[in-house]
Image: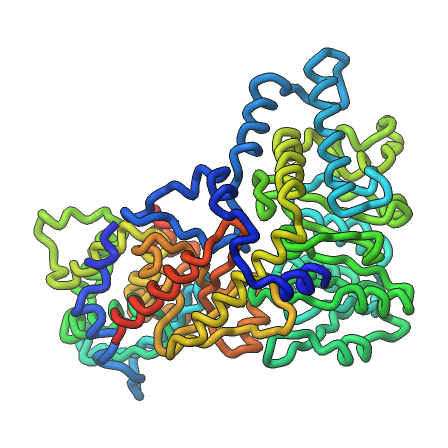
Length: 159
Length: 419
């Protein structure tokens, strides 16, 4: 296992100083994500303009992995089109569940610091929750959970 | 508690030969992430000593068949061994008769048996069931299901800031509508030992039966159900160095006889026609289908193992570990111990300032240290202390003082990572 490589400085830094932390008002899209297994709760608001994420913010209570994942996610998807964001969501889910071949072209960039999470099955959902919630916000699902059945595809193979 | 008195007189770890005991547990030789395993998740499940493993192997290799049925050699021997295991459990908790011991799949199953067998028969609309804030979800949810079905009402005993039940409040909850009490003996989340003798005695003034969830008590102290005068007592084998998949429900014979069966099937009947079924006598009435024979026999072997060491000796040693761990962990700045009851088993639930329990658990695991992180299936306790989750170190008699030192070092490592 590579726990050391998981709690890397970039993750610890985003945990300490989360970027885009707070709530947008007004927001065109909003979702609350919940992981009932550990009680983590994440609130994501965004402003979508011309199908691009003009601005995004998150807040909530969570572990360091979840908070850093959310913080890094907001910096990466800001300015991206909805389609590009959905591609990143899909790629991140595959990365976290060990299904992404990082030797093939992908768009995750330094988000690959989360690749170590695949060796910690009980923590995969912590990293995925922000992405899961962003997907819900983009698709106008107000409340979502890591245990939601129609989203199990996102979390298969990790519980 | 007897055990506590003994432990407070003793302050010398050497009276208990922990190294000899550890040699009985093959899994304690394991390395995790290249480090010796420090197993501090005993409240979730304990490890199995070689004599119990050997007993399971001997059963499977020389004694296995289905019980209570055939007349052949193996069936007879399996039946005898299964019945012997029941007698060991009877003696272990000093039940009056062996038929008062029902083998179940575990504590949860035992509680559900009482809910279905007693609750659904005797509890009616408007009746009140008393539970406590300290209950494990397994002693909350079945009663909520019953309350919903019957229109009964659940009343909850609050706790103080130390994690102790408010006994005055408990006594105030009683009235003529009170029909049942479900009470955890030892809190799995905090380690609080509840004054159940006094609480049972009070409930009996109102002729209210009391179910004790003993999952966290039976592994750590001598239990005498006749002396406690509890009506039901439940616990699981796998927290007592036995196998998973088996536990017991103790019930007073008169109550068990008055109850309706929980599960229908083979072995729980005296005769069956399509018009009518006549139920078997206790304990068989509550043991439908093929029971976990191997696990029950393994449970018996685990009881033998623990009895040889002595539950009073175990309690005394574990209390020394608790005192030592409490002192060591309290000295670390940023550590907050949740649950500081005067009477505790060797469980330390704690939080670290600014660090989420799941991150603590993951980083401790890196050092080979196994603790539980989360809500411990006791969300009302977490809500009471306004924390989403805690980290919990729970000790067994095979843990050493050096395990406590390793935990303290591990916690400091966690704090360094998040500095």
